[in-house]
Amino acid sequence: MEGAFLNHGATVDKGENARLSSFIGAIAIADMVKTTLGPKGMDKILQKVSEGDQSVTVTNDGATILRSVMLDNAAAKVLVDIARVQDDEVGDGTTSVAVFCGELLREAEKLVNERIHPQTIAAGWRVARNLAKKALEDSAVDNSQNDDLFRADLVRIATTTLSSKLLTHEKTYFATLAVDAVMRLKGSNNLDHIQILKKAGGQLKDSYLEDGFLMDKQIGVGQPKRVENAKILIANTSMDTDKIKIYGSRVKVDSMNKVAEIEEAEKDKMRQKCQKIIAHGANVFINRQLIYNLPESIFAENGIMAIEHADFDGVERLAAVTGGEVTSTFEHPELVTLGECDVVEEIMIGEDKVIRLGGCKSGAACTIVLRGASSHLLDEAERSLHDALCILQATVKDPRRIYGGGCTEVLMALAIDREVENTPGKQAIAMSAFAKALRQMPSIIADNGGYDSAELVTQLRAKHAAGGNTWGLDMYEGKIADMIDLGVMESFKSKYQVLMSASEAAEMILRVDDIIKCAPRQRDEGY
Image (cartoon, rainbow, N blue to C red; front, top):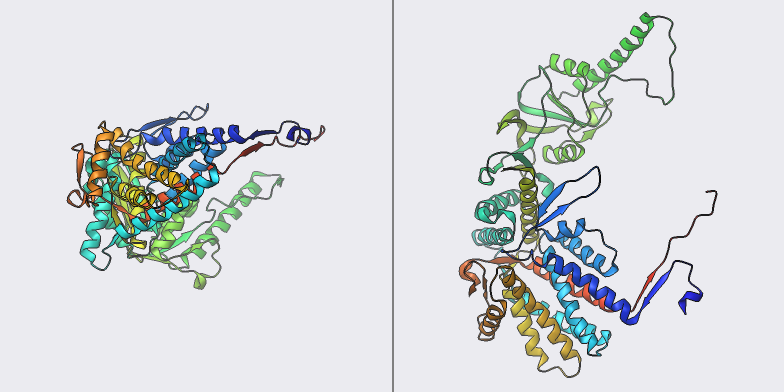
């Protein structure tokens, strides 16, 4: 029927076909990342196939995997979107949110096949979600009033996050490193003050937290290599010999002397610019753009340390940690705020020279130096550490924590199951499906470790029913254990975000009954 009034090239999938397409697309994406879930999860190799870029990424980070996959299915794109939002909001739980959404849709597919209407399923899910949310909130513990307990909680949360990452074998070391870095922020929650610098060589255990800010740049020739009580002018200005930069302009001369005069005029202009910069009273000049030979020699004569080509992120971050401003014009030195730090010096990391800014005005500034055998290893270590930093930042904002190892999923499922017994009608079936999807999470974690998931999850369910609501999976021994003894903790914010995002996205996909694809409007000939 729609074909009569839709443009040529537009298609409509209706009813069962549309729903089936949505379910299959979303479940396929969830199944793709499912094997990366948990401390025994596997890694994926992502290889680009364009002619100019054949780079390889090895990762088990859900957001990185999903972001790299080109998709044509609308429902699959929704899953990628919620994983990206999870990554931005909390930093961890990106795989969990996609897998849980896929499991919900798998259960919904069975219910739809049993002729239960999608709106009835959605209504049951909403009731189940509220019950799960209440159970989650009741199980959360807040130790933020006691600094020692709160720090111990942060270390355990970071350790749990890193357990499923590349850094799992050094997780205690890196968890302490991440907590030290986040605690320096003193609640400001600005992760820009924590820089991660990757240097190939050595081993992961050689990584360390540097008190200060490191720049992977070089100091100009003949300039001081160490400056104490530094006054830093941070700039974004061109420091090449000022050429005639009017597009299409030409200069005609009738002798080489006049060419020399033009060159000398350009140099005079640059000398004047350098004198204006020197008049600011700074002893360190950091520029985002290149600094050519003439200005470099002028700065050297005046005992000023000049650092060129600090990339834009570096300049912005420098301004934040040193308390300075990024400047582009130099006519009014009195209006410019200079950055300050105790010392700027050149140090060695491995065989490379880097510049260290110590004692920055913002005491929160620090750099985590990552060492490792290869660039792929360092990239994955950076992603793992970034996830840990993000989850710690989220926990500092919302200090509640819960127990991990599948404990809270079984706890929430149990709360829903108890209410199902008192709920009449088909909504109860949808609520049971929601609880079953929750129990699938620890089941998948156990499967990824090569354990008998059916045996472990039924044991865990019985333990929770008997009142052991802090018990979860011990993935190193292949049995159930008390998470208090193992110290397996997660951030409340992360689990809450997974529950809400996945259930809302699954409900949105479930309510779809038509998929309309429109071809782009064709341009008329001649344009």
